[in-house]
Image (cartoon, rainbow, N blue to C red):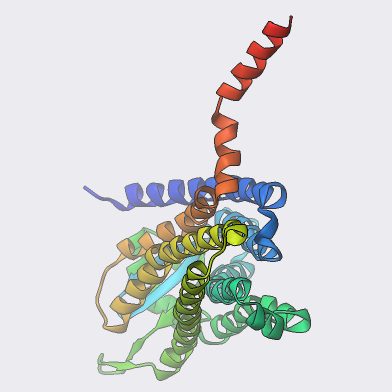
Length: 339
């Protein structure tokens, strides 16, 4: 039987385990990018470094914040315990905001990844849009998304005495936790009037529309530039000559890695968060099971580097060499023969 205590322990293991694995794997990927990147990878490796560093920072922040998600009727909240923490309730709120805002940064990264990937196969597009200040502006877009979503969370999703009273009993029943012991931000999709009837909270719907706008713009970039990248690569391969085969192979490997890195966030981030938004919007009760989203989000940075590490041939060879004992045995045999 699933109990709160069992579920809470499971989430904690996933969060800490995911953070540890993410830091290790992304650190290994950083080493591979710096020392084993193909020569024709060019400036694309800097974007890969950018993403790996972000995922390391995100994983560490996830372990520090220890976020929980709880849904009750038309509301859901993201919270952290502060009772045994060095951060008080107010400072804990801003930690939760930063954690949530990092999702906006992550969404933007998916989009610019495809823009940059297309620029790697289209020289005209790269020279026109991805050089000098324009390139710097592209790299600043994720930071802009982070600030944008932080502002929305601080202004519209801030807790109040009213939200304390609304969530006190559901949180106590569902999470065995007192509202006074947590820092949180809260989203009320519907509010009750004096007769107990629920009505849409249009200001909150407006706030959430900002997130849908971020997700929609990111998906547009993924689909539009992904298709253009595929078409460009297909055309290049048809005109391929033997001297340029190596370059085309690298481009194919990068595109395959990028496709896998698209499926991973869709399955582990976009879909779970979409489900999380769906139930409160229609006033459907799911309770503490809604916190499964924190588990899938914690797993994401641990899984994301794997496609790049194993699809790109030079990275895969470097990793396999670390576990291949045959070269060492051959070296020892050669020394013995010489002696």
